[in-house]
Image (cartoon, rainbow, N blue to C red; front, top):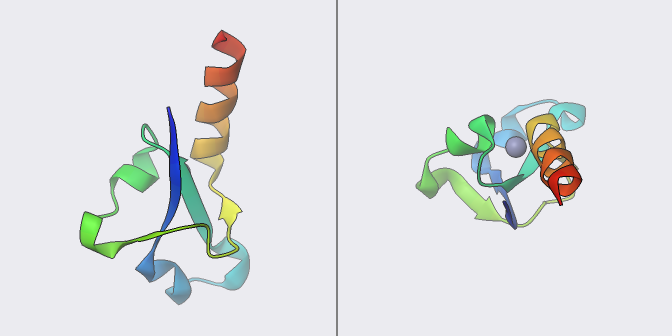
Length: 62
Ligand SMILES: [Zn+2]
């Protein structure tokens, strides 16, 4: 399911175009981010591809 968007404090170490945020609690990449490294919000980053796919799947299920 979708959750409030969050991002990793380590995203800043990536190239700007590779930075992403997450908003799905089933996202494997988001799940790998330790709680202490999570920051609420999108920080203006794109939505991660895993989250995008999971959200689309959830929507199509109705
Ligand atoms: Zn994600």
